[in-house]
Amino acid sequence: MRTKFLLLTFLALLTITVFPNMAQEPSYTVLLDGLNSPRGVNFSPDGVLYVVEAGNGGATSIPGPFDGPVQFGFSARVSAVVNNERVTLIDYLPSAQVESAPGAPIEVLGAMDVAILQDELWVITGHQLPGVTLTGLAIGYDTVQLRPFQVLDLYGYESENDVDGTGEFLSNPGSIAFMPNSKTALIVDSGANAVYRKAEDGAFTVLHTWDNNPVPTGVDFSDDGTIYALGFLSGYPFVTGAGRVDVYNADTDDLLVSYEGLTTVTDVIIEADGTILAVQYASFDIDRGGWQPNSGSVIAITPDGTITPVLSNLNFPYAIAKHPIDDLYAVSVNAVGELGTGQVITFSLLPPTEG
Image (cartoon, rainbow, N blue to C red; front, side, top):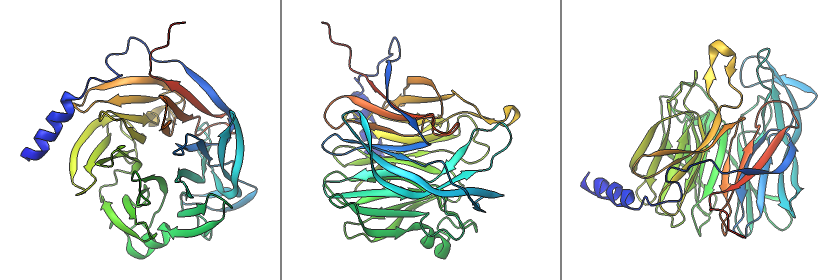
């Protein structure tokens, strides 16, 4: 306990950051437009931005993971941004448009996240769909020919082991992050309420589980690999303030600190000084039809627990990434809603230079 206190005290002393009581939120630029349900965004080590779209479903009606059918197809894809233009790298990934309540935003389940090493690219395909073997997976591709060399069947593991012990065999892997300078990765399965560790040889083991359905979402390592952070959405009815971000010791996997009182966290990144940027997806109000548009945000959480708004009034933001060299951040927005309206926006927290 004393060690934990000393660590938190030390981190608090480092909280002279770029986020102190910002007088105004930074402006952002739309980098990509016209996307279909953009989800994960990630930079490669050399600064190339990769974007995952869950797609627009398809023309085939099949049973869904919830009540009722979904419109299924192979419209999810992974793209790279080259000279500010989107270039498709991997397509024909599974995609399913959920039949939702009248007036509710369109939601598409499909490819969810991407992580890039020098010679490997990993793609996460989300919600398991009955009879569709390409969902609930982590797929490793080589970066030269972009052909899969390994597939981790996360839904298969959940269906055999009931990882969170709830009796519900659900799998919705949604996020992956590699430890710095390593092929060891953490994979978050929101449906199974679990975090898996993928070893360098591709074998995976259960690292964390929760039986109270907190719905883990995004994951990120610090640049030095000493800690990692997990975001939590919270379960239905997605009560405001029920989300959180947990920080763990990467050597022992012990919980160091939990930042609570957040709302529907879907992604996190850790800054060099220990500040965490978290994406809050949206507020949920059952009396007003469910998910509320333009209620998402990006916030900064300093090690002493101070929360500072970074970007507000975003429409269903989902994931965040930071360029490995400069101070540019990328965020996917309009992750649900009218198809073809998805975007990736970019912003910087550095003060503008005087000309």
